[in-house]
Image 1: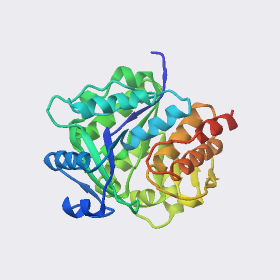
Image 2 (image 1 turned 180 degrees about the vertical axis):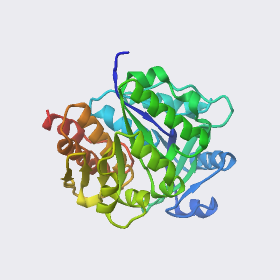
Image 3 (image 1 turned 90 degrees about the vertical axis):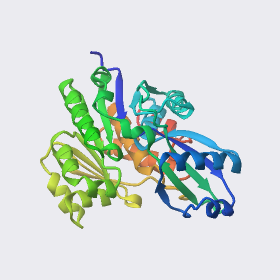
Image 4 (image 1 turned 60 degrees about the horizontal axis):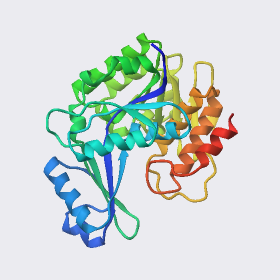
Length: 332
Protein backbone atom coordinates (compact mmCIF):
# COMPACT_ATOMS: atom_id res chain seq x y z
CA UNK A 1 0.00 0.00 0.00
CA UNK A 2 1.21 3.50 -0.83
CA UNK A 3 2.52 5.35 2.23
CA UNK A 4 0.78 8.68 1.72
CA UNK A 5 0.72 9.67 5.42
CA UNK A 6 4.01 10.84 6.92
CA UNK A 7 2.92 10.76 10.58
CA UNK A 8 -0.22 9.13 12.03
CA UNK A 9 -0.97 10.15 15.62
CA UNK A 10 -3.01 8.05 18.05
CA UNK A 11 -4.23 9.57 21.31
CA UNK A 12 -6.95 11.41 23.20
CA UNK A 13 -9.38 13.63 21.29
CA UNK A 14 -10.24 16.50 23.63
CA UNK A 15 -12.02 19.78 22.93
CA UNK A 16 -10.42 22.67 24.79
CA UNK A 17 -13.20 25.03 25.86
CA UNK A 18 -11.65 28.31 26.98
CA UNK A 19 -13.44 31.27 28.51
CA UNK A 20 -12.39 34.41 30.40
CA UNK A 21 -14.12 34.49 33.79
CA UNK A 22 -14.17 36.73 36.87
CA UNK A 23 -12.41 35.49 40.00
CA UNK A 24 -15.81 34.84 41.60
CA UNK A 25 -16.51 32.16 38.97
CA UNK A 26 -13.94 29.80 40.52
CA UNK A 27 -15.42 29.94 44.00
CA UNK A 28 -18.98 29.73 42.67
CA UNK A 29 -18.10 26.56 40.72
CA UNK A 30 -15.77 25.10 43.40
CA UNK A 31 -12.78 25.15 41.06
CA UNK A 32 -9.29 25.19 42.55
CA UNK A 33 -7.27 28.03 41.06
CA UNK A 34 -4.46 26.91 38.75
CA UNK A 35 -5.30 23.22 39.06
CA UNK A 36 -6.16 20.46 36.58
CA UNK A 37 -8.95 18.25 37.91
CA UNK A 38 -10.53 15.19 36.28
CA UNK A 39 -14.32 15.41 36.34
CA UNK A 40 -17.22 13.11 35.45
CA UNK A 41 -19.76 13.69 32.68
CA UNK A 42 -22.48 15.50 34.69
CA UNK A 43 -19.89 17.86 36.17
CA UNK A 44 -18.34 18.45 32.76
CA UNK A 45 -21.66 19.30 31.11
CA UNK A 46 -22.59 21.61 34.00
CA UNK A 47 -19.26 23.46 33.81
CA UNK A 48 -19.54 23.70 30.04
CA UNK A 49 -22.91 25.41 30.44
CA UNK A 50 -21.59 27.70 33.17
CA UNK A 51 -18.69 28.84 30.98
CA UNK A 52 -21.06 29.60 28.12
CA UNK A 53 -23.10 31.81 30.46
CA UNK A 54 -20.01 33.47 31.96
CA UNK A 55 -18.76 34.89 28.69
CA UNK A 56 -17.59 34.22 25.19
CA UNK A 57 -16.04 30.76 24.81
CA UNK A 58 -13.37 29.61 22.39
CA UNK A 59 -13.18 25.99 21.25
CA UNK A 60 -9.97 24.38 20.01
CA UNK A 61 -9.80 20.74 18.88
CA UNK A 62 -6.98 19.43 21.05
CA UNK A 63 -5.37 16.54 22.83
CA UNK A 64 -1.61 16.10 23.23
CA UNK A 65 -0.85 13.98 20.16
CA UNK A 66 -3.49 15.84 18.17
CA UNK A 67 -1.64 19.11 18.84
CA UNK A 68 1.54 17.43 17.59
CA UNK A 69 -0.23 16.42 14.37
CA UNK A 70 -1.51 19.98 13.91
CA UNK A 71 2.05 21.26 14.29
CA UNK A 72 3.30 18.71 11.77
CA UNK A 73 0.62 19.68 9.26
CA UNK A 74 1.56 23.33 9.78
CA UNK A 75 5.09 22.47 8.69
CA UNK A 76 3.78 21.09 5.42
CA UNK A 77 4.09 17.41 6.34
CA UNK A 78 1.21 14.95 5.80
CA UNK A 79 -0.46 14.14 9.12
CA UNK A 80 -3.44 12.05 10.24
CA UNK A 81 -5.03 11.28 13.61
CA UNK A 82 -6.93 8.48 15.34
CA UNK A 83 -8.92 9.47 18.43
CA UNK A 84 -12.35 8.64 19.86
CA UNK A 85 -15.23 11.14 19.88
CA UNK A 86 -18.85 10.97 20.95
CA UNK A 87 -21.98 11.25 18.82
CA UNK A 88 -22.60 14.87 19.77
CA UNK A 89 -21.96 18.41 18.63
CA UNK A 90 -18.58 18.56 20.35
CA UNK A 91 -17.52 15.35 18.60
CA UNK A 92 -18.49 16.73 15.19
CA UNK A 93 -16.61 19.96 15.90
CA UNK A 94 -13.57 18.03 17.10
CA UNK A 95 -13.41 16.04 13.88
CA UNK A 96 -13.91 19.15 11.77
CA UNK A 97 -11.34 21.07 13.82
CA UNK A 98 -8.66 18.50 13.04
CA UNK A 99 -9.55 18.51 9.36
CA UNK A 100 -9.56 22.31 9.21
CA UNK A 101 -6.00 22.22 10.59
CA UNK A 102 -4.93 19.96 7.73
CA UNK A 103 -5.00 16.68 9.67
CA UNK A 104 -6.79 13.66 8.20
CA UNK A 105 -9.36 12.33 10.70
CA UNK A 106 -11.84 9.51 10.07
CA UNK A 107 -12.27 7.61 13.38
CA UNK A 108 -15.87 6.53 13.95
CA UNK A 109 -17.77 7.96 16.92
CA UNK A 110 -18.40 5.79 19.96
CA UNK A 111 -21.69 3.89 20.11
CA UNK A 112 -21.79 3.86 23.92
CA UNK A 113 -23.53 7.21 24.24
CA UNK A 114 -20.63 8.69 26.20
CA UNK A 115 -20.11 12.39 25.52
CA UNK A 116 -17.02 13.69 23.74
CA UNK A 117 -14.07 14.65 25.90
CA UNK A 118 -13.57 18.26 26.82
CA UNK A 119 -11.28 20.36 28.97
CA UNK A 120 -13.01 23.38 30.47
CA UNK A 121 -10.42 26.12 30.91
CA UNK A 122 -11.42 29.07 33.07
CA UNK A 123 -9.04 32.00 32.58
CA UNK A 124 -9.15 34.61 35.35
CA UNK A 125 -8.06 38.26 34.89
CA UNK A 126 -4.53 37.45 36.14
CA UNK A 127 -4.08 35.01 33.24
CA UNK A 128 -4.25 31.89 35.46
CA UNK A 129 -5.74 28.82 33.74
CA UNK A 130 -7.86 26.49 35.92
CA UNK A 131 -8.79 23.29 34.10
CA UNK A 132 -11.50 20.68 34.56
CA UNK A 133 -11.03 17.69 32.24
CA UNK A 134 -13.55 15.03 31.22
CA UNK A 135 -11.94 12.18 29.23
CA UNK A 136 -15.31 11.07 27.89
CA UNK A 137 -15.40 8.97 24.74
CA UNK A 138 -11.65 8.36 24.90
CA UNK A 139 -12.34 5.73 27.56
CA UNK A 140 -14.03 3.68 24.81
CA UNK A 141 -10.89 3.60 22.64
CA UNK A 142 -9.76 0.06 21.93
CA UNK A 143 -8.34 -2.47 19.50
CA UNK A 144 -11.22 -2.06 17.04
CA UNK A 145 -10.31 1.61 16.58
CA UNK A 146 -6.85 0.75 15.25
CA UNK A 147 -7.22 1.01 11.48
CA UNK A 148 -4.96 -1.49 9.69
CA UNK A 149 -5.38 0.26 6.35
CA UNK A 150 -4.60 3.69 7.79
CA UNK A 151 -1.55 2.42 9.67
CA UNK A 152 -0.30 0.71 6.51
CA UNK A 153 -0.40 4.11 4.78
CA UNK A 154 1.75 5.76 7.48
CA UNK A 155 5.54 6.04 7.43
CA UNK A 156 5.51 6.64 11.19
CA UNK A 157 2.85 6.26 13.88
CA UNK A 158 3.03 8.42 17.01
CA UNK A 159 1.54 7.03 20.24
CA UNK A 160 0.44 9.34 23.07
CA UNK A 161 1.32 8.11 26.57
CA UNK A 162 -1.79 9.66 28.14
CA UNK A 163 -4.00 7.13 26.30
CA UNK A 164 -1.90 4.15 27.45
CA UNK A 165 -4.13 3.47 30.44
CA UNK A 166 -6.70 0.66 30.36
CA UNK A 167 -5.91 -2.92 29.33
CA UNK A 168 -7.91 -2.41 26.12
CA UNK A 169 -6.00 0.77 25.28
CA UNK A 170 -2.66 -0.92 25.95
CA UNK A 171 -3.66 -3.81 23.70
CA UNK A 172 -4.59 -1.30 20.99
CA UNK A 173 -1.14 0.28 21.19
CA UNK A 174 0.63 -3.06 20.95
CA UNK A 175 -1.51 -3.98 17.95
CA UNK A 176 -0.84 -0.62 16.29
CA UNK A 177 2.92 -1.04 16.80
CA UNK A 178 2.84 -4.55 15.36
CA UNK A 179 0.84 -3.37 12.33
CA UNK A 180 3.17 -0.45 11.70
CA UNK A 181 6.31 -2.55 11.83
CA UNK A 182 4.75 -5.29 9.69
CA UNK A 183 4.00 -2.72 7.00
CA UNK A 184 7.49 -1.23 7.09
CA UNK A 185 6.60 1.78 9.22
CA UNK A 186 8.22 3.24 12.31
CA UNK A 187 6.77 3.63 15.80
CA UNK A 188 7.23 6.79 17.88
CA UNK A 189 6.09 6.97 21.51
CA UNK A 190 5.80 9.92 23.88
CA UNK A 191 5.75 9.19 27.61
CA UNK A 192 3.51 12.28 28.11
CA UNK A 193 3.74 12.67 31.89
CA UNK A 194 5.71 11.37 34.89
CA UNK A 195 2.41 10.38 36.52
CA UNK A 196 1.62 8.15 33.53
CA UNK A 197 5.07 6.57 33.78
CA UNK A 198 4.68 5.85 37.50
CA UNK A 199 1.34 4.12 36.87
CA UNK A 200 2.44 2.04 33.90
CA UNK A 201 6.23 1.79 34.16
CA UNK A 202 6.56 -1.88 33.18
CA UNK A 203 4.26 -1.52 30.18
CA UNK A 204 5.98 1.64 29.00
CA UNK A 205 9.44 0.09 29.32
CA UNK A 206 8.45 -2.96 27.31
CA UNK A 207 6.84 -0.83 24.61
CA UNK A 208 9.78 1.61 24.57
CA UNK A 209 12.53 -1.00 24.50
CA UNK A 210 11.00 -3.53 22.13
CA UNK A 211 8.45 -1.87 19.84
CA UNK A 212 9.50 1.79 19.63
CA UNK A 213 11.81 3.37 17.07
CA UNK A 214 11.67 6.97 18.40
CA UNK A 215 11.05 7.71 22.08
CA UNK A 216 10.06 11.21 23.24
CA UNK A 217 10.23 12.26 26.89
CA UNK A 218 11.15 15.19 29.03
CA UNK A 219 13.95 14.67 31.53
CA UNK A 220 11.65 13.96 34.49
CA UNK A 221 9.69 11.35 32.54
CA UNK A 222 12.79 9.47 31.43
CA UNK A 223 14.21 9.55 34.98
CA UNK A 224 10.90 8.15 36.24
CA UNK A 225 10.96 5.39 33.62
CA UNK A 226 14.36 4.16 34.83
CA UNK A 227 13.90 5.16 38.49
CA UNK A 228 17.08 7.20 38.68
CA UNK A 229 18.04 10.81 39.35
CA UNK A 230 20.75 10.92 36.66
CA UNK A 231 19.99 11.47 32.99
CA UNK A 232 23.17 9.70 31.87
CA UNK A 233 22.08 6.60 33.77
CA UNK A 234 18.66 6.61 32.11
CA UNK A 235 20.18 7.09 28.67
CA UNK A 236 22.74 4.38 29.35
CA UNK A 237 19.81 2.06 30.06
CA UNK A 238 18.66 2.58 26.48
CA UNK A 239 22.09 2.40 24.85
CA UNK A 240 22.15 -0.24 22.14
CA UNK A 241 18.40 -0.73 22.30
CA UNK A 242 15.97 -0.11 19.47
CA UNK A 243 14.79 3.48 19.96
CA UNK A 244 16.35 6.81 19.16
CA UNK A 245 15.71 8.80 22.35
CA UNK A 246 14.73 12.50 22.26
CA UNK A 247 14.79 14.13 25.71
CA UNK A 248 13.69 17.72 26.29
CA UNK A 249 15.36 19.74 29.06
CA UNK A 250 13.61 23.11 29.05
CA UNK A 251 15.99 26.03 28.50
CA UNK A 252 18.87 23.54 28.28
CA UNK A 253 17.53 22.32 24.93
CA UNK A 254 17.37 18.60 24.29
CA UNK A 255 19.45 15.46 24.00
CA UNK A 256 19.01 13.08 21.07
CA UNK A 257 20.61 9.66 21.45
CA UNK A 258 21.00 7.35 18.46
CA UNK A 259 22.85 4.03 18.43
CA UNK A 260 25.93 5.88 17.21
CA UNK A 261 26.11 8.97 19.46
CA UNK A 262 24.42 11.59 21.61
CA UNK A 263 23.64 15.03 20.21
CA UNK A 264 23.19 18.09 22.41
CA UNK A 265 20.59 20.29 20.73
CA UNK A 266 20.32 23.92 21.90
CA UNK A 267 17.06 25.60 22.84
CA UNK A 268 15.85 28.28 20.43
CA UNK A 269 15.96 31.89 21.68
CA UNK A 270 12.75 33.41 23.03
CA UNK A 271 11.64 36.88 24.12
CA UNK A 272 9.24 35.91 26.92
CA UNK A 273 7.68 32.72 28.23
CA UNK A 274 3.90 33.14 28.36
CA UNK A 275 2.52 29.58 28.61
CA UNK A 276 4.57 26.36 28.51
CA UNK A 277 1.51 24.26 27.58
CA UNK A 278 2.27 22.20 24.48
CA UNK A 279 6.04 22.75 24.41
CA UNK A 280 6.76 19.00 24.35
CA UNK A 281 4.01 18.37 21.81
CA UNK A 282 5.45 20.93 19.40
CA UNK A 283 9.03 19.77 19.96
CA UNK A 284 7.91 16.31 18.82
CA UNK A 285 6.13 17.92 15.86
CA UNK A 286 9.34 19.64 14.78
CA UNK A 287 11.48 16.52 15.16
CA UNK A 288 9.07 14.22 13.33
CA UNK A 289 8.41 16.73 10.57
CA UNK A 290 12.13 17.35 10.22
CA UNK A 291 12.86 13.67 9.83
CA UNK A 292 10.03 13.36 7.29
CA UNK A 293 11.69 16.19 5.35
CA UNK A 294 14.97 14.27 5.32
CA UNK A 295 16.85 16.24 7.99
CA UNK A 296 19.57 14.66 10.10
CA UNK A 297 18.90 14.28 13.82
CA UNK A 298 20.59 17.52 15.02
CA UNK A 299 18.70 19.68 12.49
CA UNK A 300 15.41 17.90 13.21
CA UNK A 301 16.06 18.46 16.90
CA UNK A 302 16.61 22.17 16.36
CA UNK A 303 13.42 22.41 14.30
CA UNK A 304 11.78 20.88 17.39
CA UNK A 305 13.39 23.62 19.52
CA UNK A 306 12.04 26.31 17.17
CA UNK A 307 8.54 24.83 17.26
CA UNK A 308 8.61 24.60 21.07
CA UNK A 309 9.93 28.16 21.41
CA UNK A 310 7.06 29.49 19.29
CA UNK A 311 4.29 27.84 21.27
CA UNK A 312 5.51 28.92 24.73
CA UNK A 313 5.41 32.60 23.74
CA UNK A 314 1.60 32.68 23.56
CA UNK A 315 -1.36 31.03 25.27
CA UNK A 316 -2.51 27.69 23.93
CA UNK A 317 -0.87 24.48 22.73
CA UNK A 318 -1.07 25.09 18.98
CA UNK A 319 1.36 27.07 16.81
CA UNK A 320 0.13 30.51 15.81
CA UNK A 321 3.16 32.19 14.28
CA UNK A 322 4.73 32.12 10.85
CA UNK A 323 7.94 30.89 12.49
CA UNK A 324 6.98 27.42 11.26
CA UNK A 325 7.16 28.60 7.66
CA UNK A 326 10.46 30.37 8.37
CA UNK A 327 11.91 27.28 10.02
CA UNK A 328 10.80 25.03 7.16
CA UNK A 329 12.39 27.40 4.65
CA UNK A 330 15.62 27.64 6.66
CA UNK A 331 16.21 23.91 6.56
CA UNK A 332 15.41 23.37 2.85
